[in-house]
Each structure stands twice: as structure tokens, then as C-alpha cells.
Image (cartoon, rainbow, N blue to C red; front, side):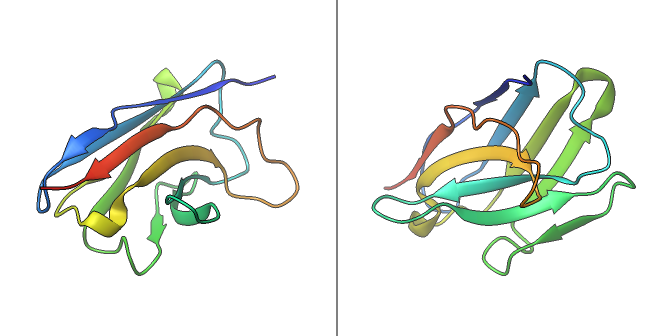
Length: 116
């Protein structure tokens, strides 16, 4: 089973930046897009954005223009650069395939806290 390990979270001030990293134990860039999800405190996990095999990206409205997803296929690694962070971005962030039928086991996630 592929293992996903998210890292890079932490405490950031409003308007600040963080870069999240998702490292996989084996190749994760296949026929499925890879994406980022987040779970705010007391809420359900929600979708943030994805990157397809052709490198195209797509984001939810709350991330558009502030977050950038990229990847290093050779390193089995997914990234998300987050700029202009807002308190409402506070959540545990996860990576996974963007599919309803073949998602990988979820990692432990990485906590992002945006607060002054």
C-alpha cells in the first residue's frame, strides 16, 4: 500500500505563506489527479485543489489565486504553496488521489494554523 506523508504545516500569521509537501512511498502520479484536502476544526474534510498528469491544476474558489499545487514526479512528491493565508485556512491538510473509487490510505495530515 502506498503511504502518504504530509509535512510543512505550522503557525503562520494572516497574510503569511507556507509550503506543504506530500511524499509518497511509491509512484502516485498515474491515471488519477493528485490533490490536497483539508479538515477545519469541527468540520468535515473538504477538497482544495488538484493537479492532473498533464500538469494542469484546478482549485476551489477559496484557494484560487492564493494556493499553487505542483509536483516532482521523480520524487513522488506533491507540493502546495499557500500565500496570503487567512484564519479560515486553519485546518489539517491532507493529500490524496482525487477520485471516489480509488483513493489511497489517508496520511496523518499536517496542521496549518493561521493566527496573529
